[in-house]
Length: 209
Image (cartoon, rainbow, N blue to C red; front, side, top):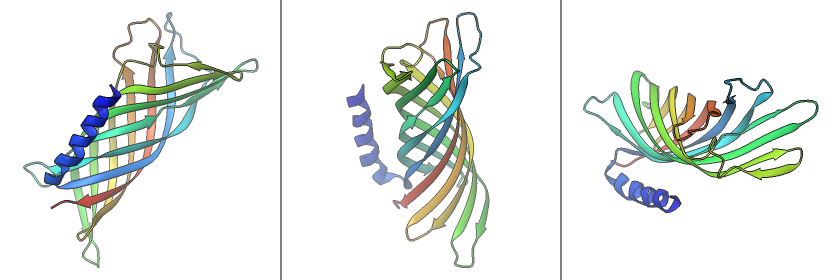
């Protein structure tokens, strides 16, 4: 599976020569685990955790110049904390995935230097798989790689906004926010786990043509 992702990355980079723009984004994930046991009872002791994310990909305009699609490779940390007076927990996970999205430019402002600031609404879908997972319970670590609540195929939908400062001779810089909801579509257990993530991102964009 990991080899397939690296093959995809190679094809992505080489094919992007014919794309409008290459981008690299990074930022912070603030994730809350939404867990329900076999009796559909949630755990009130779970707290949000923070982690990093990285994405590389390309953006291409569609027939209309204010609508774009993007395709990229992502690496997300979905972490959380939990516990009570008797026990403490921490989860550290990393998911590698393929991301596709649509962006709609609903407003553009031209500055005095003739650069532009674009305001975009965006939506996306990410398909990912666990590549690293550890649970710490009272100082003891457990492997999550074969736990069905965490492993398998994770499907994440997202909605967000982006502010992009365009520099014609270079590309641009962007600041964005996404709200993401992730579910494990391959988990057949009665116990269910999903992730709700607030994502803050900074991006660098490079013009290709």
